[in-house]
Amino acid sequence: MSIKRIGHCLGTMALITLLNSACQTPALVTRTENRTVPASYTDSQDSANTAKVRWRDFFTDPYLNDLIDLALKNNQELNITLQEIEISRNEIKARQGEYLPFVSVGGGAGIEKTPRYTRLGALEATTDIKPEREMPDPLPDFRVGAFARWEVDIWHKLRNAKKAAISRYLASMEGRNFMVTNLIAEIANSYYELLALDNQLAIIRQNIDIQSNALKIVRMEKEATRVTELAVRRFQAQVLNTQNLQYDIQQRIIEAENRINFLVGRYPQPVQRNNQGFESLVPAVIQAGLPSQLLENRPDVRQAEHDLAAARLDVQVAKANFYPSLGLSAGLGIQSFNPVYLATLPESLLASLVGDLAGPVVNKNAIKAAYVSANARQIQAVYNYERTLLNAYIEVVNQLSKISNLEKSYGVKSNEVQALTESITISNRLFSSARADYMEVLLTQRDALESRFDLIETKMQQLNAVVNVYRALGGGWN
Image 1 (spheres, rainbow, N blue to C red):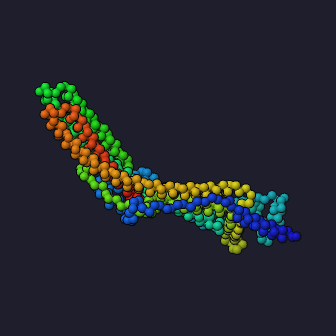
Image 2 (image 1 turned 90 degrees about the horizontal axis):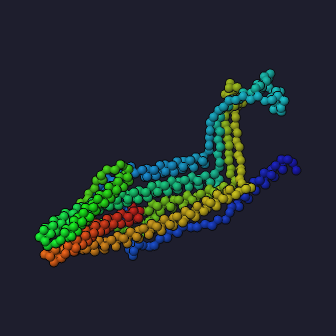
Image 3 (image 1 turned 30 degrees about the horizontal axis):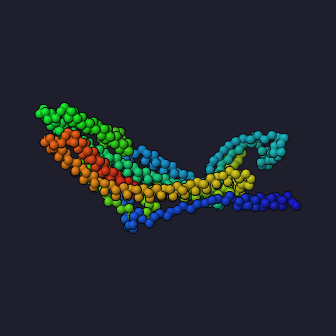
């Protein structure tokens, strides 16, 4: 058998070995995500959804809207996320460039001295460049040309890597949207907390005036020997206790203001707000729509979906590493030992075209490990998607239930406040006529103060629940 035929047979065997090895990929356990959600939150099948309402229309307080506007411009965490999006966008460009030819243009110059008593040196010594013109020794070398390298993407490895980068870019965009919804909700909740604290502080100051007047009456009663010094001291202690409460509220107001200042990206300063008529605020009516709309409206669910798509493409990229890769290399330029001859064509023309086929045959453990790991990350992404969707549904259900229960609780507490407020007048009248002792007056005042505090707290929780269900439904980012 001739050398040429032996070489041909060896090449054929190598190609068959490469193709056979490519088909031997490890078997994997896969999982398909469950996108099924309950048909409704309640028995309603109404598809109207508050999440579609823009946040500027959902919130009607101009001071709150100004704070949200400022936060969307200046919040540091949000701006950090925007840079992450820019990084993801550049990753797409990098992946796109990988399956296009790499072309470089360059030139160079050098000089080479070949030993005379070598095969190449002997040939150069007996070779004339032109008749009666020996080859220079040492030999200069000047070259200018363009060179290209291209991996033919026959298994779509590079294209899938680009698609995975696009999916991650989209996921980062949805991550930004989810951060916006959370930022808006946090500012709104802090703003309503600030209004509640303002109203609680006003209640405390009203009670200080009421209790101070009661203290004056008790002192007059003592002068008339109708009560003892003990009653005076107890009323005085009650006034001091209520005065002390206002300092705690004032500190909480400062902290709430600075929480908002931090979210909007500015140093501590007073927060403008409308703290009048807080108790008359009516929570917005929420239309929850259908649970299936969470797949479209919730940014974190959409983010998990894009992450899952990227993870699946990563598996395809890892699988393509088992297959042979086909590469093409080409060069075109001019080369000569003397710059004068560089323009002499075709004698100085340099051209090359090379194709190579290579694939793993032995020691594929690293490729197998990468493939199995990519599949494991894909299964992780499936579970993360299901967990995110389940969490979104539960958040909506919890907040809808909270809105309903707080509405009932607010009605009961309103009646309680009215009853205790009337009790203060009654207890003072009875005390003045010696038909009630001072302890009944003190306890009635304390209970009335606590009930009004609780009523303000319930109103704040109502407003926060509406904000939270708006966020849970996926509102605020669009």
